[in-house]
Image 1 (tube, rainbow, N blue to C red):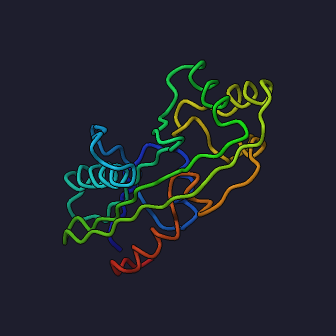
Image 2 (cartoon, rainbow, N blue to C red):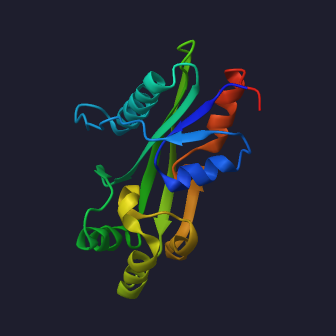
Length: 190
């Protein structure tokens, strides 16, 4: 079986990929993310995922590389990982009673042959009307600083939701159905 590299440092993506039961190695691709403002949000996440995959392929030239990049998209703006507590609080005040899109670009690259399969997956996260206590509890226990938009529906985050639409796994940052199908198309045996 070919080595499978998951080019991510995200603990949620690693945890999700373990669900496949496929041996893999998680690595930091070392890719320096640069936001190109001329790209649409869909083009941007695909571009960044591909950049991560290609960077990892340089280190693992015979492996199958899986890389992803996710953003929260709210009122026409990309909402990144909050850098401060105040920024995280403001995100949740903005999200309260509203919804945002969660958009993930995914690249599955056969580094040996150069064959590439990419995808953009969109889903929506609808928040209930949030009280200050809800926001502060999530920030204290939800670790918002390593997530696009500062939010994940796992654990305590589920309490903030009214509903979600689209691929649930996408809301966690890795659309597993797409990855599984891409691996099958690349004839990866598992």
